Amino acid sequence: MLAGLIVIGRRTKSLPETLIGFGFTYSIEVIPVATSDYVLALHRQDPGSVAYFATHLAVAAAIVLCGCGLLLARPSPAIPQRGGGNIASEVEAG
Image 1: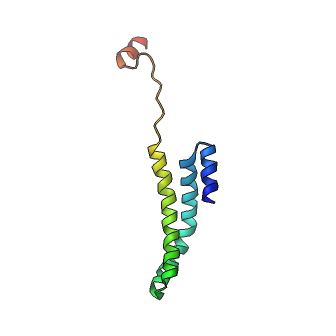
Image 2: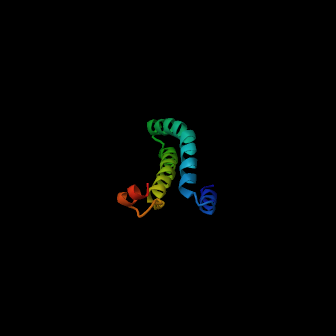
Image 3: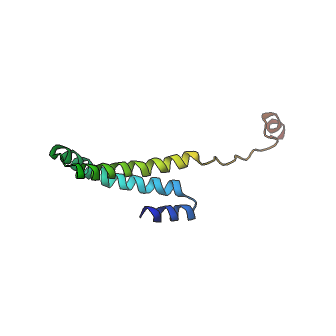
């Protein structure tokens, strides 16, 4: 599923937004269930279940953080400037 998201995000040139959107949706669904089951598994001392639910929580966080990191690393678009690019030329033109 994650590979499909990456392919779609790259083709549409919106990988960070795709990861953030999916990551938040996944987190909203997973966190309530995984957290309660994680705590229950800790009390029962079941290492397999603890690892399973901890992995789900880590993956949910990693998807969102990767999307945010890619979005922050994206170069900002150039802002077009009027005139010569300084205030004096804009005042003379205006």
